[in-house]
Image 1 (cartoon, rainbow, N blue to C red):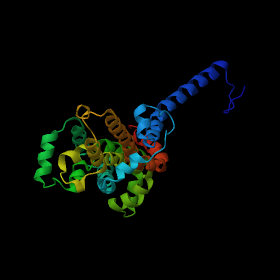
Image 2 (tube, rainbow, N blue to C red):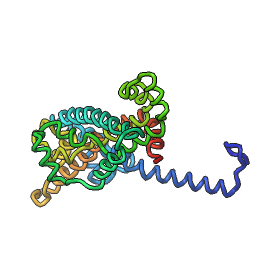
Image 3 (cartoon, rainbow, N blue to C red):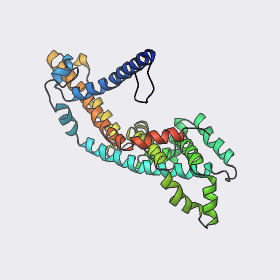
Image 4 (tube, rainbow, N blue to C red):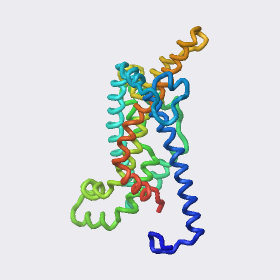
Length: 299
C-alpha cells in the first residue's frame, strides 16, 4: 500500500497512525465538549441548567442569561473600558517591546549582556505587591486608567522572544549595508525591520492583548471608580451581587430559581467575556504559529 507521501506503509505504521488519530480525536473532544457545554448552557432555561438536563445542545432555548447581563449598564461600560485598555495597552506594549528587543539583538550594542542580565533578573525577583502599590500611588496613578497600562508596559518574556526573532531573521550585514547608504538606525528599524517582522509582532500583540482583556487583579487593586472598571471586574461584581445564602431562603422553589439564574449567568458571562478574544485569534493564527516557532528558537 502506498501512502500519500509515496512511501509504502507497513501494518505497524497503519496501526500507529490509527492510534495517534484516535488519541487526537479524543483530545479534541475533551477540549471542545466543555466549550460546547458552556455555550449550550448559556442559551438554555434556568430550569434546564439547574436540573442538569443540558448535555450537548440547548434545552428550552432562552436568552434570559444574556438579557440579565445586558440589563446592567456597567457591562457596556466595562466592554468599552476593556477595549480601551486592550487597544492602548497593547500598542504601548508592542512599541516598548520592540524598542528594547531590537537594540539588544544588535551585536554592536555596548553593554548589551549587562542589560540583558538586568532584564532577565526581573523575571526571577520582584519587589512584590506592596512596593508596586506604593510606586503606583506615589506616581499619582491610583484610580486612573494609566494604572492598568504603565506598570505592565513591557514583559521581559515577550521581549526575549522578539529579540531572538530579530537575531535570527535580520542579518547584521543588512544593517551595515543600510548604514553605508546613509540610513539611520531609526529609519532602518521603521523601513526594514518592522516590515520583515510581521509574524513576531502578531505573536506578541496577541499575547499582550489577551493579558489586557483578562486583566483583573490590577484593576481590583488600583481602581475605585466603577466607571473605570474593565469587563472582568464588572462581571465579577455581577456574580457577587447575584450570590445568595441558602440558609436565608425558606422557599425551595425560590432557592432553585435563584441557583438556576446564578448558574445561567455564570455560563453567559463566560461566553460574553471570551467571545472577543476567540473572534480575533483566527485572523492572527498563521502569524502566531510561525512567529512562535521562529522566535522561540534560542540561537
